[in-house]
Length: 460
Image 1 (cartoon, rainbow, N blue to C red):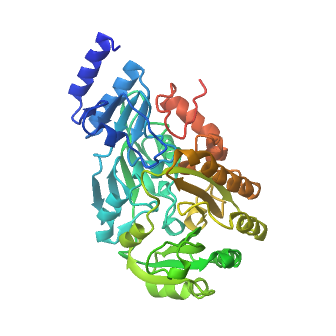
Image 2: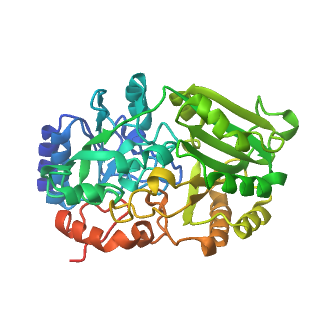
Image 3: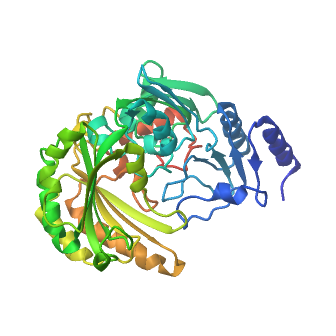
């Protein structure tokens, strides 16, 4: 039963909001609490659909005054479902998605609820971009705060490496600006330290000259040559130009045209990559990769960067998802043999193992220059599986865990923060920067109001 004082506070909160305050049973509530991963079925007490920074201040203040659990939702793409909290207050930023471009200064101001597709749509008409994730539906906020692996990272750095400023609502409801000249320690923490230090309502990014066309690579080989293909790719990437980022993936060959009918549904390996430099230079530079073997389907063609991003969209919303990840310093022959022998056949068409090629601009930032520390990794290995029937939960999650345990002996023991699961150790995401991040947490959120994230516990 709700106490009269609680009812009064809730009414006052609703009146202070410019946006809507949704409660269970109301129109829009179920849509607003739904996230990408179908395993997540949480029921918040309230969802504040914030329109501006003042709304976010009101929401944070209400959560503190009523001691109600708090979470922040932008894209809702976290497989761990950290955007939604049971019996708590969700700050829904999805309507704060404005993007403003200054093409001369090569800067973008991006609302805290903007998605990758919103940023790409605003930057690409100017031939500008910043590293963003593979799926157009991913929220810029979570992507940036967790690091920001994406198709331009070897050329332009991680998303967080291009963050030059942020407007932040702190855990005590204050609004501050983080930049190199204002609260630089906070800016350092926002560059890969997760959503631990405040709710970011606006990001400011440095942009790079990219596109509108890039040279794209999508080359499918049969699984029987996966070992040789990965060895070839590893050797090629040792001296590959920074303009090329590629994520080889062991996956099911799609049952559709233009894939040959006799191979549809089989396990294969695909090299998915993006060359973000001059097209003609890229064709020559990538020739050792694009001419290798006898691919089932070789696609090497220029296309608009936004179109390439659409073809590389990840997953199907509503499926049950589980994933693991681990950084490796070397894609050794032994690791390749171990994986090829173990995988053989994937458990279903929604399962895959992929290798995100690091290096380049990512490695030119020191491990303590930003909260994201994993600068010496050659690859981030991801293992993901999706399914529909809850009865398959144990088997599907077990498959991913088994593959992870096979890779782990070859790892740096680090985990990409944006792939962090609830059964992972958060210290593995932040490595040598963890102690400094705890100090930052003590300063900006000592009561851990913001805990539905890659949570760093304050030491107090």
